[in-house]
Image 1 (cartoon, rainbow, N blue to C red):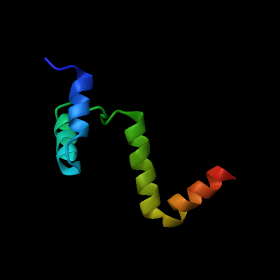
Image 2: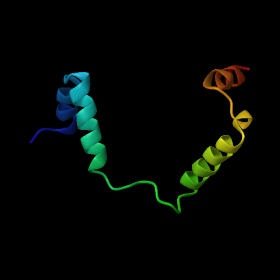
Image 3: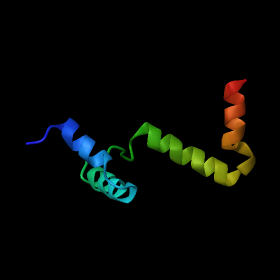
Length: 70
């Protein structure tokens, strides 16, 4: 049986599309990580709704980068 490192090395040699397909299949094989009662998911949903109601409440990625560098 191949080791995880051997499998990873072989997978990294695949074309981009094949690696993406493999990654998606592997992720789909895992149990769900986020649940409705997950505080992080609830916060993300709340913030998304807030930005929908008031687009001025959000900033662009470039604005964020400028703020972080300051």
